Amino acid sequence: MKVLVINSGSSSLKYQLFDMEDESVLCSGIVERIKLNGSRLVHKVGAKRYTYETPVNDHKMALKIVLNTLTDAEKGVIKSMDEIDAVGHRVVHGGETFSGSVLIEEKVMKALEDNVELAPLHNPPNIMGIVAAKELLPNVPHVGVFDTAFHQSLPKKAYYYAIPMKYYTKYKIRRYGFHGTSHFYVSRRAAEMLGKPIEDLKIVTCHIGNGASIAAVKYGKSVDTSMGFTPLEGLIMGTRCGDMDPAIVSFLQEKEHLSAKEINDILNKKSGVYGITNEFSSDMRDIEEAAENGNELAKVALEMYDYRIAKYVGAYAAAMNGVDAIVFTAGVGENSPYTRKDVCSYLEFLGLKIDDKRNDVYGKEAFITTDESKVKVLVVPTNEELVIARDTRKIVESMKTTI
Ligand code: ADP
Image 1 (cartoon, rainbow, N blue to C red):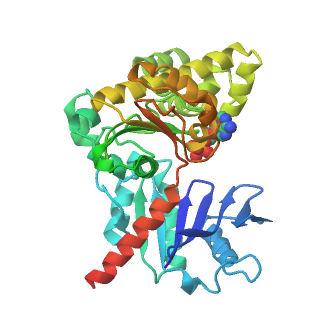
Image 2: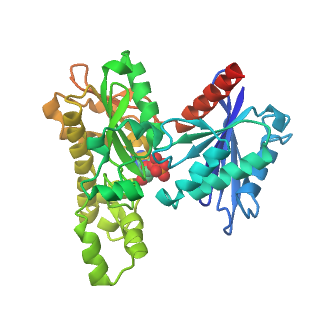
Image 3: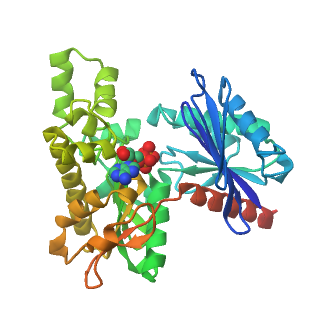
């Protein structure tokens, strides 16, 4: 079975084609700058990389270009589109409707539309990708895999906010959490690496990329997570503020005469390490380099960034009444020995000890604690696409057995 995985964003469309016989990636790529100047396709087959610049007006056109490339005599990996057996779509927000992956039928499309209000930036481009894919590949099943689904197991004490209950009832304001597919994948992989059943483990998973979130995964289920109603809550991120006193919002709005959209933009796009460093950079590589070269704001940004992660790990150890393993993943988590060591330096009281040599690892699975360390720390590169492909296969196979 071949599964095409699509991640459709506002101006980009990422794809991977899996051969599910051995879960290998036949090719992957991205159409960038949809509807913008300089749009292009970057297509990768093994070590080969092709770049093709062409105007791309919308998501349907982007997907057409992808499908043509997949079947191209030179760059392609399949003879015809008929070889694609199913399509798996990443969807950011499933609201309370979806606690697992689903076959995308009419009523699911309607539910996705209903959830747009909860994710006005993310869900519309996801929907555009699904609509385009259903039009261009009408004869295969399409499956939706939600970033929020894994966190639907949170108990009320973790997902309610302490605001009037009528706002939950009226607007569904609650913690949803994001990066669920990644937290799911790395927690399972960590259990495999530890050689223990996931049902026996208390794991804190740290997805630290440009967007960043932490989850408490107790016996395989997410019981708390740092992102909330939107991805703004929790950790300090590239450009997002994370936790702060909510009274700052109305204070700043009044002082600076800001609209709701303007303050929202400031907290999402101008804050985080980018804001702390006076707009120097949102990229943690730049921040680490500048801190090393003595830039005081970069130093404090880095300290704040790591301190916030450590506080969450401590909180989640309490939430689960213990922690067996801590997992680092995503851009920073997979590639920054500095941040991993700095975060773990706050956690030595748990009986955790980093091994510097083992911690010198980039983008590869590894244990980075000493053999004696009571709490194990692991680096696990995330693979959200593989989870989407696996879920898609599972749903397609269950359709066959029920027919
Ligand atoms: P997203 O998917 O949320 O856009 P990624 O998971 O790709 O983000 O992570 C991007 C972040 O990872 C950037 O801030 C980048 O600087 C950081 N990163 C990548 N490599 C390194 C590294 N070697 N050291 C520190 N940070 C790194």
